[in-house]
Image (tube, rainbow, N blue to C red; front, side):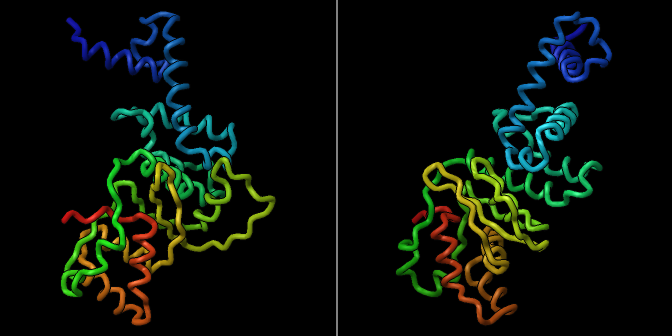
Length: 248
């Protein structure tokens, strides 16, 4: 006798693959459910990757999204976060050899979605650190805000993303240099903000996000460039809302 789990597994397989074993046993009405399920997940991908669709075109995106959905079932609720592997799926696609930046653009789209839906938490204010002794400050670990995402991309993908993310109107021409770029995504009053970073700022925030103390991060960066203004770097990161408030 079939269990409920067996039935659900077979039904889901039939929904996602019309030629799957057992699909015919559900009758012609199955196609209604298939169309609804597939359209729903493609629509989620379209909502989560609007810059990718604008750059690649609706036809390509529809085909890619359908292929992705058939091979990547939702693993958790809510569906608003569906599509975590889409950037890697695009990177592996053989149809985009001439568009090397698209996978990184998808990665930024994904980070934007994660930042938007991340948990709320008070962000660190500079006043919390202002009166601390130097020894205390040096030994501090600063936790990233739940909405913070630190990104490193190739092919000038951030410049391309910034100029094509809806509802921004794409420029007629965009001058770009094929170079690595660094950015910080944060959420301030329910709005996701994208801030361009210098490589050193990116390294600084990334180290702090891994649990490195302020003193250790400062020492590591200054060994590479003794002229860095670490106080200004920390102030920029705090001002962008990168860190969670310190609990005292």
